[in-house]
Length: 435
Image (cartoon, rainbow, N blue to C red; front, side):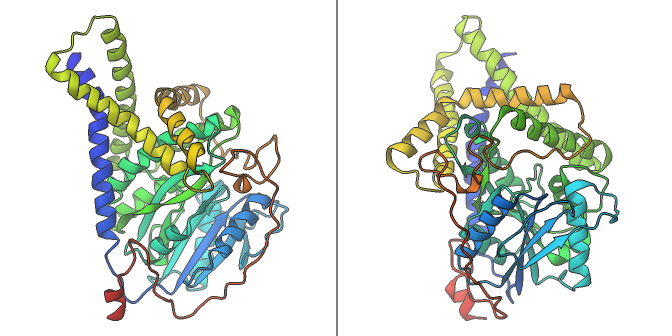
């Protein structure tokens, strides 16, 4: 028993090592060059009519004044009554369109077929998928455009309105991605896959497709099936700024959809190897929390004697564990005007809530499991139900809603010859000169 507890207690050391390894690999992979450059990036926002948030996402992306050739597509359902300003194209999924997939995956499959018809499914076209409650940073867009992978993604950061209690419950999502996604996506075989900022080559999307019998977890299925079909996977060390749920009801609804979407995928869609990896991931997460908690209780009760030679190492492991939450707080509070004392407070709260965040992550999974399979794609509120303001326009520096900005369109013509994009992981000038 003590051996198992010690394994759980020293898990933070493993996670911290994986974060460092993932960061180094991402930096090294970012130096890879691909010539010629991709000729077009399609930024696709899939929604069911969230007009405010979608318009804010478009405004933000247009405001980047990107120097790469891109188009913004909005994919929506026919019953969604909304107006989208600044989109290059609005794709409405016909009611009579049928495929194996349902809900969001059905819409993704339809837009994929549209790209096939328009011959936008080759190696030189990339598609960046954006949810209607998050927005990729400028550097993220630039990096995935030149990344030499068929499929890649980066780090989800709940920066919008960060500082709310529920936003801190998403700190663990950032941590998990920092060590889990950066390593396994980096070596070419993901275990967990999230949809925020998933970027694929047109040729890879055409090969893998979204046409699988699923009602949720379409990103997970696509990511694993991409491996099965020999598509290359990579990880980009930059951020997609997401919005955490505003209510406990939505928090549970979201996690329930994820959990049962994964369960369905494991049981009915994914190959055996992928299913084993996912089951192992869930089991180890549960084991780590339960064994650590039992060990703490036993140690405090004097029932678990600790050799003096291990106390210093256990203390170091605990410091590393809290430091990962502090890192998550620093990342998530760094997307807006959160500076000075406000940012220090965000980091401190993220650290103090470390055990609560971990407990909630386990508890909500148990509740979601007991509530059963919803058998549908349950959509949550994208805006604060109290303020009724666009969540993406929330003042991240103050943690309170601000007056919604008028949508200002910044014309950005599609350039036929892409210019070199410079960032930490982009093409170097020397490589660009050889072109």
